Image (cartoon, rainbow over all chains, first blue to last red; front, side, top):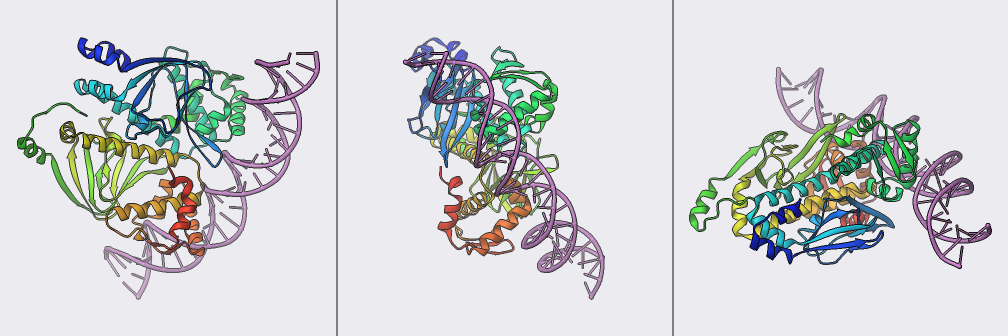
Length: 221
Length: 221
DNA sequence: GTGCCCACTTGATTCAGGTCACGGTTCCGG
DNA sequence: CCGGAACCGTGACCTGAATCAAGTGGGCAC
């Protein structure tokens, strides 16, 4: 999105901008896009792959802040700070574009649409945090997680119902604030109820509507 | 930058701006500053009093999103949307200033400091959501809540250790995702341990450092 | 092949916090 | 002065998810 905006821009502006845009990758699974305390002021747009945001551990427990898929923008959470407060780790082979934030601001000044888009993205992050903050059951969380993940895969051209979880059970648990064992148990429960097919990290959502029903408290609004 | 339109300079603009700022109040306890679904596009700055943000109920349970004290800005969460997704309710006699968002944007365009401030505020909201999303014990949450509230009172010129909770136990619980009874129990436990004085809604933080210690997991970072 | 490591599953047990039930206090209108 | 309505405190009990503790199975090095 940001990318296509930049490319359709006027000539001189584009030339200046291209110096501030940089394609990066491939990152292999486990490699860092950036680490905590590195200077921020850049945004990354995922082109291919998947990235996990990891906040510093709290008493020995990893905190996963988000998973970013192709098209998603990484770095907005640090927009107000000088340094990143979190690590960004590739979970699978990943390619990104790296933008200097100043360049985007310069562009946004001429194109309100971009700036509006950035605000919308920030709003979405805030919304995601808020939703996660409320207290929902393990089943509700995981059902919503699966449905939402499917919707996001669909948005980047993949199937909404058949996909690979690219993250471990532990990652999911650390994101949803559940123990790894609970994630495991709920997934098998869903399989027993014919809601999903499950084989290692391959999932198929068999009863999308029923899953959406289970996750509704999180999914609506 | 946020909404590029008027870009003139000088005093005329300022005069025009004053038309877009409006002092409002007093609101009495229980009165609404605005309700869900009202058009957004305005920010409120609390001048005096306290405001509760209330999201729509999830299965009969009220969701409190935030408490805003004097100096705090209300409405940032809705800047990306056309309408508010939540109610804003005064908990006590409250006065505010109401700003047209477009006016602030116009001003921000000439003064990067303002825009930076807005981003910082948004970042702070995001941070608060994130922190609340993690899984902490009831004692940790309530200790952090008290300490943080004190710090915020201090910032608007009141005591950081002796103050009135202006919200009910139920409000606190709905904010921290705890049952009302749990809030009550933890507060009495804190009193028994000489961490606080407690009489109805009057609190005194007796052992600030120990409280901070208890709430550290939430307070740090 | 053999052995090791890691992710995952599954069962048994524990515990923090929710739920339910009740009693007390304060405030307010009539 | 009385009655009702919030709000608050406390006890008894229950439950969902964490924790503890074994397994299982696949991938990879050698």
